[in-house]
Amino acid sequence: MRNIRLLIQYEGTRYQGWQRQESSENTIQGRLEKLLSQMCSEKIELQGSGRTDAGVHAMGQVANFHTNSSLSTEEMMEYINSYLPQDIAVIQVTEDGERFHSRLNAAGKCYQYRVWNSAVPNVFLRRYALEYPQPLDIEAMQKAASGLLGEHDFKSFTSTKKGKKSTVRRIDRIDIAQEGNLLTFTFTGNGFLYHMVRILMGTLLEVGEGKRSPDSMPELISAKNREAAGPLVPAKGLILKEVYY
Amino acid sequence: MRNIRLLIQYEGTRYQGWQRQESSENTIQGRLEKLLSQMCSEKIELQGSGRTDAGVHAMGQVANFHTNSSLSTEEMMEYINSYLPQDIAVIQVTEDGERFHSRLNAAGKCYQYRVWNSAVPNVFLRRYALEYPQPLDIEAMQKAASGLLGEHDFKSFTSTKKGKKSTVRRIDRIDIAQEGNLLTFTFTGNGFLYHMVRILMGTLLEVGEGKRSPDSMPELISAKNREAAGPLVPAKGLILKEVYY
Image (tube, rainbow over all chains, first blue to last red; front, side):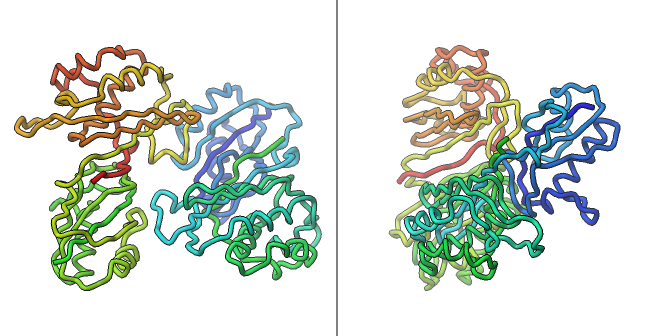
C-alpha cells in the first residue's frame, strides 16, 4: 500500500477541532477522511500529527494515510482542493516511506499565539487574535518565558486529568514579536500537552499585566498543579505553524 | 451643531459596498447611519470620503456627520462598537471643525491590492487577496507602473460611462512588494475613479504575464478608451488603506 503525506491548512473557526467525532460531522479529520475515501474508493483513515481543538487554526498540520489508489499526488491534490470547503486546503501531497507516521515520527512542533493588544478593535484579526486591551510589559513576559525553556514536567500547564501519560516536554524557544499593537508569541518544542500553549499564554499574560512575577515560572512548574497556572485563553488566537520530522 | 469625524474599518465580504441603497439593508453607510441615528436620537446622514464597492475592504475609511448629541466622543465610540457587527469597527472618533467634509476635503487616498501568486491555495488570504497562479514578471509590472505615474486623464481606466465629470487624476506612487507568494500593490494618488484601481490592476497583471508591453502605458492612457485597458479584477483583493487631508 502507498503511504501518502498531506500538508494541511485550515481556519478552525467553523470546526469542532481536528479529531473525528461520532457526534459531529464538523471536524477537519472527519471532512478529510470522507473526501479521501470517496477519492480512493476505499475506506481511508487519516492520521494527524496531533489534535487541534475547536477554533484552533493550522498553517502546517501534517497527516498521512495508506491507500491502494493509483492516482498521482498531483491528481490527489487537485481532487481534494476542488471538493474541500474554502477554509480547509491541502497545500502539499507527497508519497512517503511505508514507515512514516505523522504522529509518532513528529520530532517537534511550532505554535503561534496572537494577541491584539489594544482597546480599539481590529476587524481583520477578529478570527485570528485574542483582543487584550490591558497594557502588557513585554520585557517581563520575555523574562518569564525564559524560565519556561528546557525539559520539564509541565503538569501545571495542562487540562488532562488522567495521570498515566508522561507530562514531560521540552520547550526550545519562546519568541515574542511586537508589530504595532499585534503581539505574536511563537512556541517551539518537542511536543505540547493538551491545552498547554493556551495555559502558558494565560500565564504569560498575567505576568505582562503585573499580576504574577516574571521569576515565578520555576516554582509554578514545580507545583505540578493546574490551579497554580494562569487561565486557558481562547482558541482563536492559536495556530499550529509547523510540525518537524 | 457638532461635526463628528469617524475612522472606520470594515471587511467588505458580506456587504453591498459603502453606499446606502434603498433596495439593500446591507451597506456599510446604511448600517452606520441607522446606528448613529439611534445613538443620537435624531436622523443622521453620514458623509463618507468616497464609496467602496461591494466586497472591497477598508482599514481607514473616513466619514463625518453633524449632530446635536451631547455624548462625548469616547461615549460614541463605545456605543457604536458595542452595536456594530464584528466585521465593521469605528477605530477613532473625533470632533472636527464645522467646515470639515470627508469627501470634499480629501486631498488623496491610498489603496492596496493583494495578489496570492501561487497555484496552492491560501486559506487565510481567501477573503483578502486575488488568487493568481500564473507566473508574474515583477520588474515588468514595476516598469509599467512607472508609466502610470503623474497627472493624466484616466478615462481608459474607469467604468463610468457618463462623460461630464473630469476623469483627470494624479497617481503619486505605485509600490509593488513581494513577501513569498504574496504581492501587495500600493497605489497613492489625489483620487481614484470608479473601478480605477481594479482596472489598473487587471492591466498590470497582463503586463506581468507578458500579454502586454511594460512600455504601453502612455499609449493606453492616450487612448481614453476603457476597451484598451485590462480587465476589472475582483473586489476582494482591494482595501482602502488611508484617506489624506
